[in-house]
Image 1 (cartoon, rainbow, N blue to C red):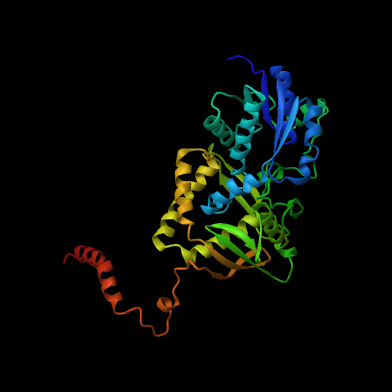
Image 2: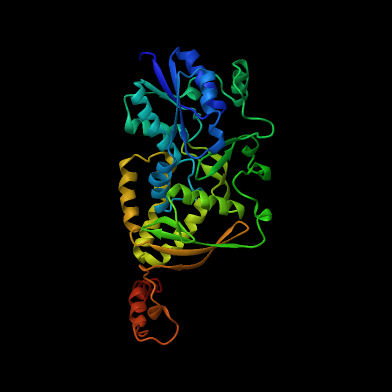
Length: 401
């Protein structure tokens, strides 16, 4: 295989990708274009362009993907109620296919012959990036330096960076890695590799600790249309503004912290700590509205597929035909999920205080414990007898009658 002439690197400005940028130039003697996706990292993006150019990039692309991220990736995933292993709302997982797709688009624009990423050979991100490359641009060569070089530890990377005058963002004050976007912040590595060690409270950037949250709860109302949130407290908001507002109020009240030992796709367990305030609020609110609007069997069938859908996102199969087919089913299930949910936030807890919908299947005249004229309680006897018949026959057999 000929050596690459131009590589587009998914670049964050952190330790790994900064070292990779310089290493690619020295190892392959090629041109390297740095590409950074703006998914809501905020001030982290300010030094990215200058740092990439100083490290040797021939060009830098910083692409604002915030609206697309929320509208076309987060909202579809949320419509599926996706949660991995009962706790993780998939904030890092869902970002990778969008980052990789935009990277492919830049590679085609730049007429590059290769793409590169900074994911390690132990993690999930390498799979997520490379499955996307394969689905969208299989002709591009993929370079994964963590699977090639002899810089096999963070310590070796720091030494390489110092030799090449590359600023090192990992310090004694922050001995762990961080991934941030509009949906969440994840923390892993370093001091968090011990699952018995409690995360230091000063680590968290989005949320107050529940103990430090306000002593007075706050109530808010969320409006949904066809499964998507459209308004907070009566004010209609665009997707990014809506999520930003929920992140702020959720973070203030300590909502959305998760400490999880999860099963990576590559086979090992790892410990991750997450902050997802706005996503946690949306998840609770949608479930409450679904309880009113979804048919029982549709709800149960959908829930039986949530685990599979979440695995597709976590493993990196966003652009696979099975995820796309399942998405159509998930979206169909959300057509009647329209209405309003009232929530109360208090010291890390999200409590449903009310829900209403013009598409509600809840009927007081059927459900009431008071007298009614629409439900014959005597009908329940035959219903029970028919459902009990197989149990009765089995019991008679086992008793030899």
